[in-house]
Every structure is written in structure tokens, then in C-alpha cells.
Length: 80
Image (tube, rainbow, N blue to C red; front, side, top):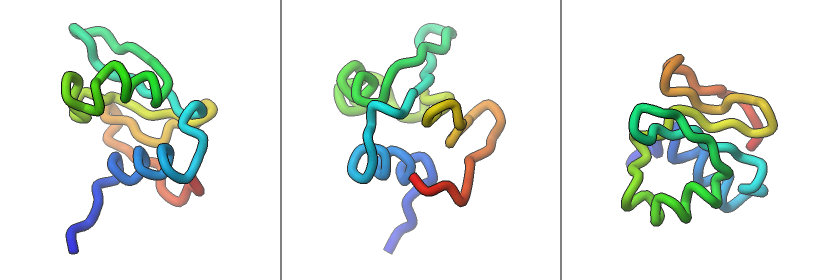
């Protein structure tokens, strides 16, 4: 059995176990970080087809950074 990556785990928990509207996704768009809600990101990216997950720079839930590519950190121990 393969282990899910932390980013995949956060996205999965947000979409299926929590209110996805509470999550903000920052992603790179032509060298500019844009911030949208998770459901809006899924729609814009056409379910990660046009914007891959590798362009996600951070994920926040109510001002708490859960994932940050720039810092190389992922918040552990948070009940999502």
C-alpha cells in the first residue's frame, strides 16, 4: 500500500471530511501567486488538468497555513 503525500492528504480531507470553502489555495499563475477557495481552484484547474498540484504554493484554513511549498513545511497534528 502506498502512502499518500501530505498535500494529497490535506486536499482529500478538505474535500471529503470538511467544508472546502474554508480552505484557500495559493497557486502560481505566470510568476504571480493567486489565492482562491479550494472549490474554485478545482473548477479553474479542471480537476488538476490545466493547473497541476505542483503549482500550489500554499493551502490555508482560516488563517492557519497547512501547507507551504516556499517554507518547505507542512503543519502536522492538525485535525482537518
